[in-house]
Image (cartoon, rainbow, N blue to C red; front, side, top):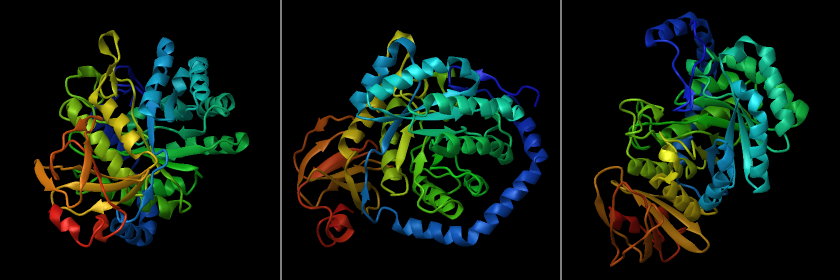
Length: 443
């Protein structure tokens, strides 16, 4: 690989610097490191697989307290940083993540000003230290960068994520041993400066990387950039695994590899948008409409957070033409449907308690309580259906916060999540419905 790094400013990610065939031969060259990965994972399998099966059985069956689980990634916008803070306030989100690219070290002062503004507005900040190939080739420069960030931001950032999507060669790291070369000095400096670190920031469904990394690096929070299907809904499967199964497997991989009980964060997820051209991070088929993105945002958050295995989810990101909550093209910031979808799910579920998932053959029904009210969030991954709720319905709120009309207990359910507020106590009774076998009426 001659060229090591080339940035794409439209999609906020590096370009692929080589062809698919060249990347294949590169991976073949490092086959030895993959053999060591196999050995590390094989040793964990006898404990990890039964634990995964246990987590699958328990998922959505026990109450989960949701305390500040919603978070958002941001980028500084110079003269519009105050607008960023206003958006955070409107969304009701008090925690964010900002990337600190190693190649933008000369501009750390502008990041520092932005961090101070966030701190003044009581926004908890996580700084993500992003690498490129030069940092692997020059470890001392990487170490100096990490140390400078820790010194300048240790009182402004609650956490620091070490590295970013390093299991993709375009981000400059070509095998897990090279990532360890970046993470080891960061962990040593974290001890020196008494800061908390997050990692390993693996992207997608590559959980085999966790055992060898977590064996060495004592992260305070475990992170994953967990995508499922960037063209389809979060209930879709990849190699037979949907969002729920992936979260259970990830939790099992973490628990057999690190100190059990470590909190798990998802520090990046989004759906790229159709019609955004070069601004989309995924060209071609993996793009969805704005309405689909808004639907999937809510569904993904509920599927992951209600599992009880994920403490926090960061949506990537606030402002981006190709995938963000706001479209910054044509000079203004247009709020997309996903902005209002996130605002609504935060208002409805932050501070709530998930009770349990109500069984239904065609619909997803998740029961929550908050401030003495009972709410069932419902949608269907398939065709629209009509549900006759077996308990009195007081009101219905749509995905974007709009009140919907209610004539009786028969409600049309489609792919757009609805918040159905019901009378009675949903925390008791079989299947969480407040009565014996009353969910049969929903089938």
